[in-house]
Image (cartoon, rainbow, N blue to C red; front, side):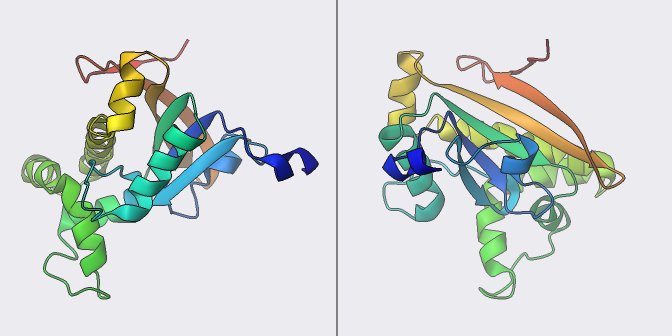
Length: 192
């Protein structure tokens, strides 16, 4: 811990849900200082917004990429996410701030996907899984809108990937790592 007094050398920015069941430090068995964790509802990365409408998450991403010089950004989702459920069911649509309105505004980033998935699959477990994947795809697309991220991708200095955490029957389940092809935006299973 004494070495951390001088600074932090994280190897990745982990964008994760604030759900207490999906703690990246525990899941990745990470030592203090080894990962820079950004947590929010449904592990969403917002698009670059120079007006700062979503300052907290954007500031953390910017700090990790430009100040800590991390080599990787990982977007980590998890099953049974309350934010995913809220947008899929429309639970907080038209709610006032403080009564679900903040959640609704934050989750509006994936409204279009939620609507399309709900029309085809309702609010089934399969619909939740599909929207979890759609949310990761949206977050990864949004990450590519950050100027510092675009510059980093051109030099192949950083990578961006997604991880899916599943816990079954109350136990830590498996962690599936996916990587995204920057030119195509398509997922590829990176298990080896």
